[in-house]
Structures are given as structure tokens and as C-alpha cells.
Amino acid sequence: MKKLTPSPPTDLSLLLNPFSVELEEVVLGALLIETHAMSRIDSMLHKEVFYKAEHQLIYEALENMYSRAAPIDIITVVEELRSRGTLEEVGGAYYISRLSGQVASSAHLETHVHILREKYMRRSLMIGGQLLHSHAADETLDIQDTLMETHRMLDGVEGTYAWKQNRRDFATLLQDADAQRKQRMKESRNGLTGIPTGLSALDKMTSGFQRGDLVVLAARPSVGKTAMGLHIALSASRAGHKVVVYSIEMQGERLADRMITGQAGIDPSKWRSGQLTKEELKKARKAIAALKKLSILVDDSPSMSIDHIRAGARMLCKKKQCDMIILDYLQLLDTRSASSRMNREQVVAQTTRQAKLLAKELNIPVLLLCQLNREPENQPGKIPALEHLRESGAIEQDADVVLLLYRPLLAGFKQDKNGKSTEGVGYVIVAKHRNGETGRVKFTHNKGMNVFEG
Image (cartoon, rainbow, N blue to C red; front, side, top):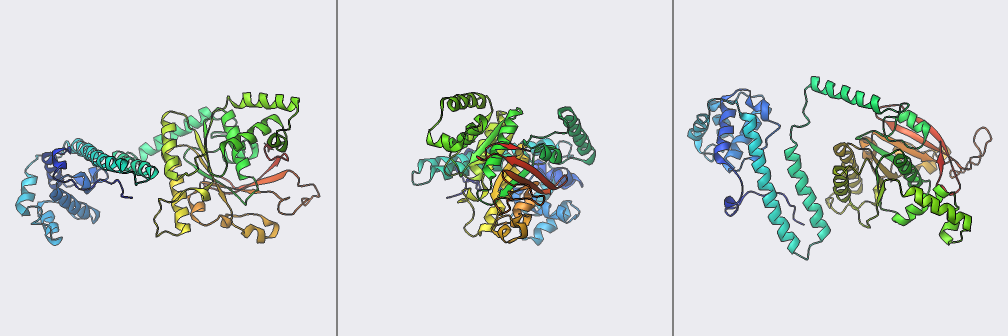
């Protein structure tokens, strides 16, 4: 499918697109007469912001000179354009000289650049809108692909708008860090500054899941990834946080089954078979009433990509309806939008990177569930480690926290080293913690794997 990226304006778009050749000349003129002007706006502009093709070539030359720390003035820019073979194409030395005569100083440069960027974004939206119209009208194209391309186009425009917003001098950065410290002290509850996990020892080690962090929860199949993810979702929502669960593997109703039986203390097999006693039915109804008060949203769309998740999460965050995302699980994500030239490891690497960027952009924790490969089964004790993350070392690289689930009984150990039964015992191994300590947290669970304590 054709990408919805803005293309160079056509003659028809000349009549429609917002632009100002005069303003572009003023900006370029200011860059030519002021020695340090480029340092003020280099992160605010790129050549496509200029509408006129000749101006794009001139700014490209200025960028190249600035990156080499070459002095910028009328003579050096003319020589740069000549060496690039584009001097005559932009109008010759006379045009460069005329540009410099357009302004007396660069006093209002940032304001002028801001206006240019706004015009560029309007052009981008208009051109993208034309493409959207044609794609939406073409019923041979997959509507989901069209929606995803729409989000990508808007992300590109928003990225341009946000340019330079994250650049801060060190004094400002220190002030912002101290402001966050004050907020953490204000919100801290016995050392818990993030979203609680429902395991006190894990909360103590991590201070809860922190804003902007990508947390990976990994295990072999049937060890309890989803069950632990739901436990964390319930713990977070009971603490007043709004949680969104993207469930690719399991239907939303099956997740609700686990929550109800855990809350009510009912045997899951009896719930599934519909053989409940009157007392158990009473407990179930009470559990449902309690769970209805929690703020948990579940999306179990059959085909789910990281773009789908990002679009939904951004909308919910703007409405202040999302404090945390749980994604179950990585290897089942729809990756059809990835390049056909990418192998599986590269696709997974791209996806985990996008998950990390999502956490950072929305400033919320993202809990990403994923599978471990078979290697732990060949290790002494069958204890998982970071190198067992399936298909990509990028998972370990991008994650701020990596949690590995381990249940000794499933590994064939009925007793621990002290002779105690391992029935209902598990461990969360904090294998990576970018901002804190690592270690092992013990927890217990019931037979149905829907109630955890620790």
C-alpha cells in the first residue's frame, strides 16, 4: 500500500497549499547574515519545510556546512552550492546575494521559522488528506491498512510540530528532575511511587512500575504470564489506576472468567462447566459487583498491531483513561506492516522499540508479556535468564525492567532445598532493572492460578 507521506507539491496544489515564498526568503537571508543563526534553529527545520525547491537546495547546503562547523556567509554558501553542482539551479550567486539583502537582522528568526513549520504541516495534512480520500474510496484496499497509514501520517506531522520541544539546557533539566522528585515525595506511599504490582517484595524492589518504563514479563508457555499480568492489572486498578489490557491470545470473556473466579474463590473448572452451587453463585455475583467498580479496559481485537495499540492508547490517554498498558503478548502481534526484507528477529526488535517509544511518549508504564525460548529446559534447575528471551536481544536492550517467571514444580522440583513442598510456589526473577536492583521475589498462588500473594 502506498504510504501517506507528503509528496512535493504539484501545479494544482500550488493553488491550494499554504506557503510563503517571501517568508522563506527572509529566513534564508537571516541565516546568511547572522553567523550563529543556524545554531538557534537547526533542530526546528528540515529542508522539506521549505515549499520552493530552490530553497530546499539552499537550506540543505546550509545544513551540511553547519554539520561540518564551516563558517556561513554569502561567499562560503555560494562556494558550497557550486561544489554541489546546484548553484545555477538555485538562481546563481546573484540570488544568494539578493536573499541576504532581504533582512537587516535575525531578530525574529524563531518566530518566522515557527510560521514556516505551521505552513508545512498544513500542506502535509492537505496532501495526506488527498491521498486518504483516494485510498478510502478504493474498496480493493484493506481499510485497516488505510487506518494505520493515517495514523503514521499524523504521527509524522505531530513529530514535526514537537521538534525541539525536548531540548533543554542542563539547568532546566535539573529543575525538571527536582520537580519530579517533589512529585514522587508527594505521591509516595511507603516508598511506592509507581503503579503497584500486588507483590509487596517486588514493589519494594522497583517502587512500582514507573512512568515511561517498558516492563517485560517473560516465561515459558503455561507458566503463568497472563495470570500474573491480570494480577498486576487488578492490583493497579484497585489502587485507583486506569489499566488497558490488549489481549491477543485470549478472548476478553476468558480474562473476565479468571478475574471472577479469583475474586470469588471459585474453582475455575466448576465455573467453566456451569456446575455452581447456590453459595458459589452468590459469591460470583458479589465478585462481579466488586469488579465492575474497577477501571480496566480490555481490547481483544483478533488482528492487533502496535499501530492499533498506539492509536487506541493515545486516544485514551488524552481522555485520562489510561495509566498503564498491558500487552499479551509480543510474539502474537500483527507485524504485516514490517518490511518484507526484515527477518523475524528484526521484526521483533522493531516492535519492542515501538513499545518502548510508546511508553515514553505517553509517559505511562507498558507491561509487555513475551515468551522465552526452550533453552531454560536445558539449564541446571531450568531457571530462566535474560539470554532466553525469544527471538531477539533487542527485548533485553529496550526494556527498562525484565521480569522472568519461574515455578519450580513445573521444572520438576517437588521440594525446595529445605525439603518444603513447591506446590503453589513461584518466583519473579528481576533479571534487569535499569534504575535499581535485581533479585528474586517469591510468591504463592492457588491451584487455579488466579490468586497471587507475595
